[in-house]
Length: 190
Ligand code: GRF
Image 1 (cartoon, helix red, strand yellow):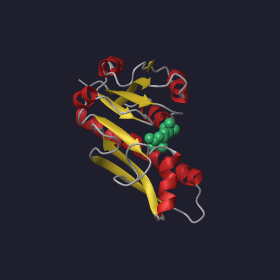
Image 2: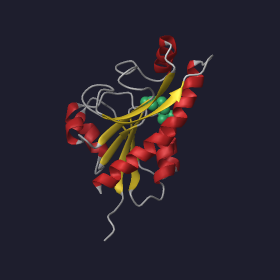
Image 3: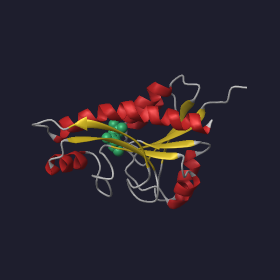
Image 4: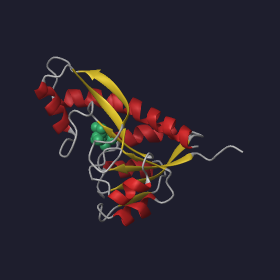
């Protein structure tokens, strides 16, 4: 009997272009399916993308409350943090150890950690004079951006780059890498 697609929950705080890349890639996949989207912000643009795709959504009242987050994740088998800006409570990290991943718009372990999100990351990369940047998908542990790295894709930093130009180039790489990593992990789980 063909196993049911792996149930994927996505945690979001922002516009949701990575969520959209996942929704598009997993839309009719027999391997994995986005089954719920959870946010700490009721005004996150990502929620509208989920609703447009017919995926149930939930908004957390207390993101630091592990029981509330576990309830919101429901029967998910795999959890993806796609632009989620809150620290995941310990109880949830241990429940989903090895089955929860985050995407970060830089080549970790550099340019990660508390406060390193969005344009702050790209500004720091440009200020450092680095010749390349990229994207990292890693397992989530109890600290921001520290978990074991699963995959990375490198992109060049070009002369005259602004934080926005670099962010746009990195985002394209994110939309390629995230669905690939999620499908690989789902294949291992099914
Ligand atoms: C992405 O750059 C992601 O790497 C970072 O937050 C941004 C979210 O973008 N963690 P979006 O909401 O998926 O468009």
